[in-house]
Amino acid sequence: MAQKHDTRPTACLALADGTIFYGKGFGATGITQAELCFNTAMTGYQEIMTDPSYAGQVVTFTFPHVGNVGVNPEDDETAEPVASGMVVKWDPTEPSNWRSVETLADWLASRGRIAIGGVDTRRLTRAIRQQGAPHVAMQHDPEGNFDIEALVAKARDFAGLEGMDLAKDVTCAQSYRWDEMRWAWPEGYTRQTAPKHKVVAVDFGAKRNILRCLASAGCDVTVLPATATAEEVLAHGPDGVFLSNGPGDPAATGEYAVPMIKGVLDAGLPVFGICLGHQMLALALGAKTVKMNHGHHGANHPVKEHETGKVEITSMNHGFAVDSQTLPEGVVETHVSLFDGSNCGIRMADRPVFSVQHHPEASPGPQDSFYLFERFAASMAEREKA
Image (cartoon, rainbow, N blue to C red; front, side, top):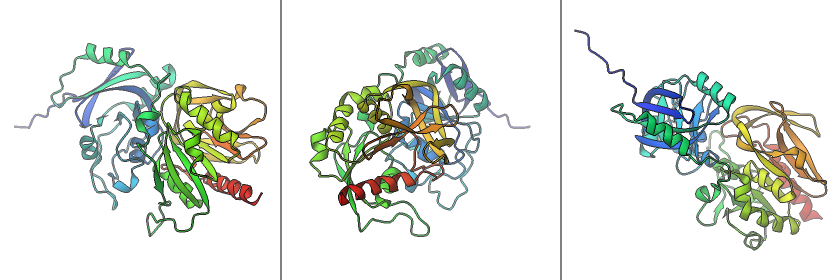
């Protein structure tokens, strides 16, 4: 007699509009509430899940082969996963990669993150694009018992990311030094031995690979918490200040970060910002930020640099953007998205202060924009000569 298989779904994703997706759960069990976004990267699911910029979000992966290379400690962008959960098309297979030390399912389960497989991610992605990033509730129950009304209610109860300061939840608890450089074959990660520039990196949710890129560009990096004041930053005597990526609404985090940035600008130091750091630098200079319909999340985003005409393929992860129409006099738009024309970079016309919306450190993604770290280092070298 043929064996019968239980085909009941073990996970459920409920959107605030009442749309329901069923699938097979893996990772941790339980319920989570979040904003739903989609990421188009073909690699790097582990780096994406550990990117602090994804706090408060469940990530839908449009690429179907998720989990196929397993996970390993070297690819973590922070100590633990930060994204609330993940949605994939196909159930993860057994990993096939010499660097793998653990399966994706076991890694998620041990770290309390819920995932659902077997979902029509193309349909889900279209829904996100059409209606904007929805609020969702996701449940993994091995017994397949779901209270749909309660799940939809939880999705509707999610407060959303507008007005939410999440940087304080993902920043470091205290300052620390960083000297690890970018991964390179065959040595892997190596330590910096001859730094040239002293940099304070303000951690709004910094990815490790950003800090590695700073170290590889010759920076002696001291990382400070997001709530650091201008006085605390300047007390370290930096040659330059870096403003990191991070999650949440820049206007909310800017309540305490903008005064710090203004104090650093008054000191005349070179400044470089990425992602949330870019948005808050813009706020400090007098511009405004806006919530995007579904944001930019992926590793294939074309960005044009106005001054050179060069097009870079970049990694992106942001749900808010700088409104280029509000840039004040003396602030120049340097980069723009070729997908939708949104702002992707600014600089001050009269001093070495600049920032970009995209992620020049990649991880995952192309490395077209690494030159920005070298540009930051060069700006500090020029200031020292002057």
